[in-house]
Image 1 (cartoon, rainbow, N blue to C red):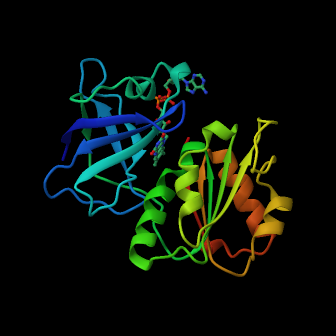
Image 2 (cartoon, protein in one colour):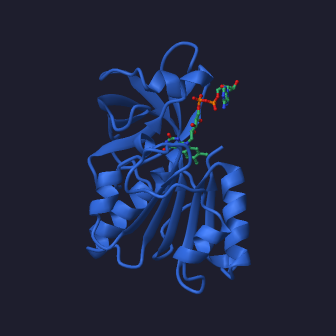
Length: 225
Ligand SMILES: Cc1cc2nc3c(=O)[nH]c(=O)nc-3n(C[C@H](O)[C@H](O)[C@H](O)COP(=O)(O)OP(=O)(O)OC[C@H]3O[C@@H](n4cnc5c(N)ncnc54)[C@H](O)[C@@H]3O)c2cc1C
């Protein structure tokens, strides 16, 4: 089943990332953390499907995406950053590997945070607190950090932001998420470990977590490459 969605609103949340709000088709449903294959509904682009994650909640009356543009790709995300209200996209049925299996550590690189936006918003709506949840979010620079203020204000959520290429950034860590870092911030015997980002990052962090004693069954990953 393919759905045509009309863009209602587009706004920048960082210099490269846009929040896009679309009309929601009647009866359309998804789980927080799920993604969908999306194509631009214009000549030359309808076969160029790319996966993006819903960042709105299933109960919301509109569908929201949070999408990072890579103009150097000359691809779909460059086009998405230039969309105007009234433009249309085509989406297929929702799918995805990451869903909320319980509190724990949400580890993201760049746009890999999008499934956690939906999952943490839903958990907060349902439980009223994110007690027991830690967000570890890595970016190149401070201005790349998506929804920093919203995350910092989520009750109960512990946030650890780190940047890898921004000497001047304030109030954040300046390092990679590696075994040494994780050993200082996690309790290996507790919680689930959700990792979303480029495949190399997922592999390195999963290996580090296992070496620190985290049971493989509590590691949930989604590859954003
Ligand atoms: C399940 C899932 C959910 C996702 N959800 C989101 C989300 O909610 N928000 C979000 O922002 N992203 C999300 N992503 C990532 C998103 O799908 C990609 O950023 C997107 O597919 C990139 O599309 P593109 O057409 O712009 O570029 P691509 O399809 O990556 O590239 C187009 C062309 O650009 C060239 N190219 C590729 N890489 C480079 C490079 N590094 N430098 C120069 N040129 C290059 C290649 O020639 C390629 O053919 C998700 C990914 C997955 C797997």
